[in-house]
Every structure is written in structure tokens, then in C-alpha cells.
Amino acid sequence: MAGDGGRGPDVSVPERGSFAVDERDGRVGRVMGWVGPYVQLRPPGGGAEWDCPPDVVRPAPPGLALRARVTEINREGQLPR
Image (cartoon, rainbow, N blue to C red; front, side, top):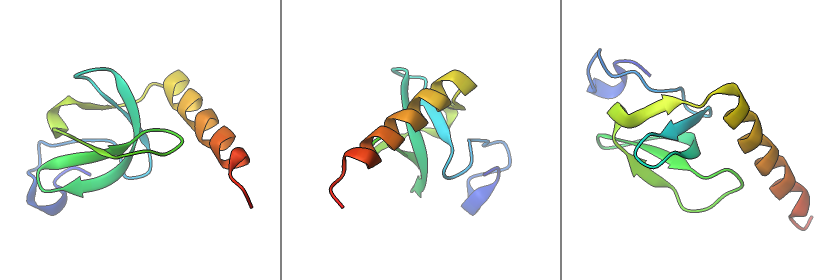
């Protein structure tokens, strides 16, 4: 999302829909988009989104991204149909 929405060409965060790590506390979340100057992340499997400054958001390494996706899949399997 480099340069997206007037945030400047030096801002580079993972793409919407991918998993990222909030380096402030190590939480992993799915990138939902931007709200003002912040990146919105949602925990795997659902929950409240949180705002994260773009300078502390990094792409989740493959192992963490896989773990987060498995959490989502497990959650989807538990939802009533």
C-alpha cells in the first residue's frame, strides 16, 4: 500500500487482506485497511480491530501467517450454519 491515500511514498505496509505483526506487542492481525493515519488490524478468528501506526506494522512471517489462517479456518468451522 505504498503511497496509498496520500500517506507518502515511504510508507510501506502489508496489503489489505494479508497478515501483519504489530511490533509494539507482537500481536498478529489481518490488515483490514486504513482509518486516518492508522492501519487497522483484526485478530485471526474475529474480534475488535485495533489501530496501529504504519511504522510499526510488518508483514507476518510465513509461520505466524499460517498459524493465523488456521485460527480463522477453525473459527469458521465452529460457526453455526
